[in-house]
Image (cartoon, rainbow, N blue to C red; front, side, top):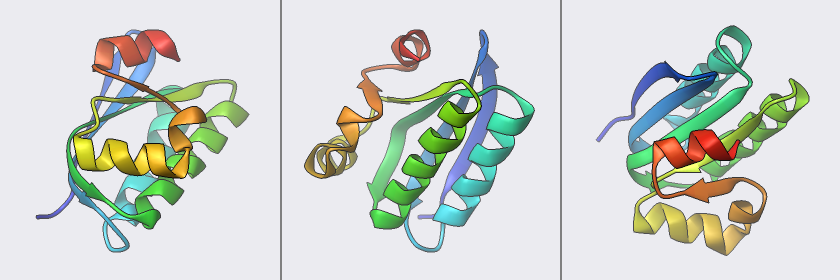
Length: 112
């Protein structure tokens, strides 16, 4: 399965929905989308992970870079609705202590 990305505004935040698999080959696409979203739309970024079925260390790297870029611009990043395998990776690496994880997009927008 390939990576699918969709971006839309929600209030004063930008939501990037990530679906499929986030790995070494697909991470650059998300990296570019996140950079564009933060620079063009809002430094308040929500990554909707509800349809993301797999993420490796390349994906974690993109999340960290997104957090650094957004906070550097005065915003922040929240993660919404990760599936169990992705949530486990976030917990295991401790990234969920740096980037807040919420059960849905609306909560994630409010938590930035």
